[in-house]
Image (tube, rainbow, N blue to C red; front, side, top):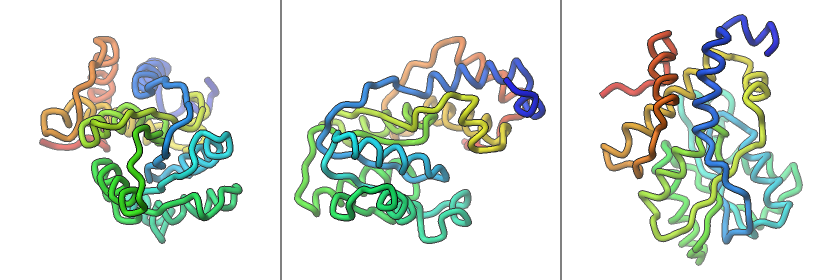
Length: 223
């Protein structure tokens, strides 16, 4: 790890965050599916990864989903899905392959509204590839399995190592805050009926607790 990366998180915090990062990824092998859904966020790498998987021939149709949130409004003023679509077209994905869902404000809406957009286009997929931020794979999987149980879900994200992702975002504390916040949602959302339950290994939970104790709390939800 470089000196730059050490200056805002300690070596121990890095290892704790890396453990959570690894847990968040589903480690699925991308394979041919009926459709893909690119989940909107602050990370344009989702659109890049979706375009690359399209060009690899894994699906004929994709949906970009997402409106705006406080963290994306400045970066994507026309909405997450709209900017994702423009980026994918610039990367060579044909306009005809892309469906747009520009209203979703959370992961549950990403799934339910994308499903409706596909139905409106006459598509009822049996297999769906969810493309998300690397640390959002597990939560998006758990959400889709709850809200769309009849389809088979495969997860994918931009193939970045943890250090490379830290560098791409440029704010180590923010990334760790987001990792911690997503794990809290993985733990808590099943109790609220938003997602299926996922096992969290003891060492991952211990890392999560330690990072909360150290103040990585800006993305936590309050009861």
